[in-house]
Image 1 (tube, each protein chain N blue to C red):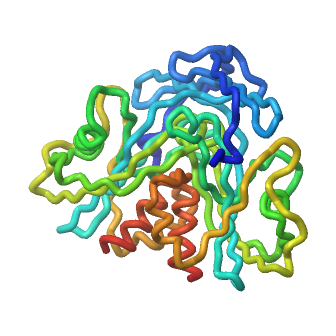
Image 2 (tube, helix red, strand yellow):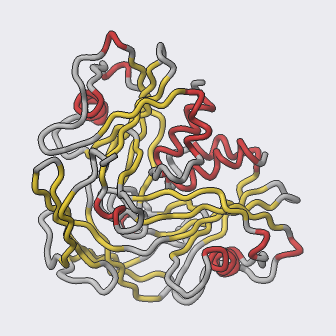
Length: 190
Length: 190
């Protein structure tokens, strides 16, 4: 079966400059030694563990990720519903918008629980991701999800009973934020 | 008290090209839509949850991370012992070498347990990190750790009894791999 998310006509080229990724260099002295460190500036982000409590399922997304494709045969990863904080919105408003756009559920910002934050790709990007938790059910369904504009992703429903086996199944590529979110959910909400 | 890891004379500049970070562009077609996606190529890596079972402590490292400094007042993060796989070594040999260099313990490769792997920074880098577990005690101590060459890091000992409170303490910046590792250790080894 042809994978619906999988692209055609893939080419990879060097890219002397990018409108999306900018290179920067920090120079500093540490214990008397002069050092230079190159890194990129990227947006901070939010991600949300989304549970359908009536159906006993977590709601995740899958999407094609170009740089993962270089390492893994499909380049399609399993992730938490997530997005960058690049608009003039509070983090909770960004979470609410991403839940709506990616999964089709309407959640009130006051029902979004903040869990913690962490720093990703600390050696070369260092962006902060803040993790949230929210619950939905059929009464909050107002759309089909799948992303907006040219964004293309699939909504995945993971039964609570399958979280453990899914978590350690490496044939389903995952982000570390998803792995932490799954085990946090088992320990704190299940 | 002056933080020992914290650098002086910090300057940040644009960096038109870098010997360490190279920009690439993938062009592809997805459901009839032509897309371009810019990303960087970075090395894959390994990380290890390291437990001193006789002292009932986990062994972590702290280091100054330039891109985190842009977001957080010290730029010093708490991490698992880890390293990139850029040499002609097996992943387990790389883990053994990083444990020796960063923490000062000698571990045999056959005593290093593979846990799982995941993909970090999937939107712009997509590197794979493989996670391991190993146990040490004083009899395996052969050095002081702290990194090699100009690398500078601190070894941190976290009592098993403090893992829970440490995990949710956001005044101590962490990577998602460390958060997953801590909660995995609680569930599987404690």
